[in-house]
Length: 222
Image (cartoon, rainbow, N blue to C red; front, top):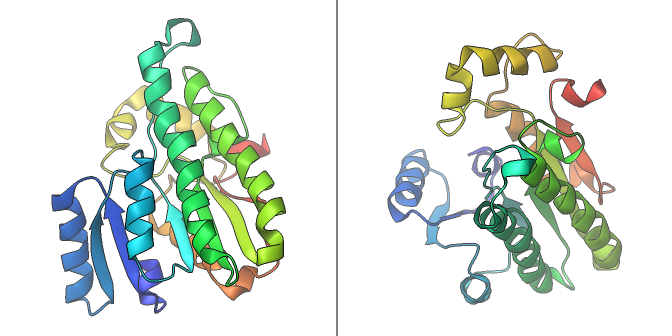
């Protein structure tokens, strides 16, 4: 919505056709330029085929992600593989695929990472590991693709109130833990990420690449 409001033609992509269409319909009714794309980003071949069929992409915002929390002593290979497949492999090859299209034109690639890419957390060894990996590959890609004027950055949010995180916020103990870590006196909202996306997508960040924009309310400050 933020990018569309700023004048971008937006392609909304996700696995769920119903959810994608609902988002697109809402945006179209508001008068925005938007289209739907049903796509599983873990399918590298499908990603490459879909991107090849699209008009040149100037901005990629990859917000696909997965978390399966458990004590590190109890992590299963199945959970590890599932989280790594989306958070690392899909993020890597989606960025690679779009970057190939950006060569000679430039562009901005934005990975939605996490504050947990900069700290550790109880029961979050796998999640933290995958998000630290995103930070590492972002730096390397920024170095390699900089000469092509392709910028690669991450946004690292704290806990943001969404339908997916609502059960966490509904747990008094977990909500208290989150509140104790965030230095500002409120929890994160989706709107808090919009400005960060617009900044990294636009020429306002023309000299920003290979770095992280922490939207964490001071969580990682200590």
